Length: 248
Image (cartoon, one colour):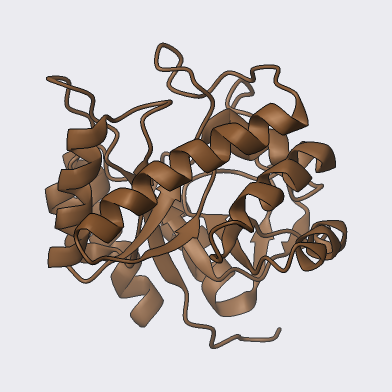
């Protein structure tokens, strides 16, 4: 069995509060991650929350990424909405542009883009949506983050045509289907809840470049970054252990 020595960065969705409503524990999580995916106001967040999350990332020397989604505050961006390819491109440019402008107001750099929720899942299932998103990201000269999979060649070809670099992402606490896609949240066992199972999956991805699907298949997976979640005290402690496991 081949053991890899790739350095995998931790990324986390952040800045998802809205007005007086607080979600996540950004201040506690930020010191343990390398990349902050900051919501851009459509599925969560607002200009003030976006600005303060950028400040927090700067203070902790964390890379800043735009985390655009469908315009769906009520559904937290987890519902697929129908838009034309042109409209999806425009929605992306609007949101990324807003975060980039806030970054520039603080002399900070926008480093990448990671779509959120249903938009992320839709781009992994629909190459036309992926193409529209790549088209938007090409305006900002930054990489696009997408799901690491053994079936990425078509996506690489599309990204190459737009000269957009790709970052490949795996998930610490989500299970996978045999085709390399994430198990839909509507299905049973889509999320790993056991600390031991999560840490074992992290080690399998980081050391061996593989993951075991929910139905027992071994899937090759080469990830640049690992998504973690920090929305409760237990999750924050788990991120510390994930960090330690990656360094051990």
